[in-house]
Length: 49
Image (cartoon, rainbow, N blue to C red; front, side, top):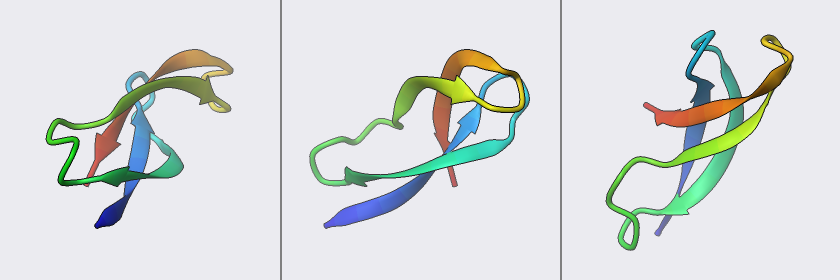
């Protein structure tokens, strides 16, 4: 029951990454601190639809 989700940068709002998450175990939206190649720094990336 894993689902592919897209991660968008909080600052520039561009979708940079995709990852998988288990929808049954994790009900809240995913957020990770990753490198944004457009902002050229590490920022929070949040799950978008």
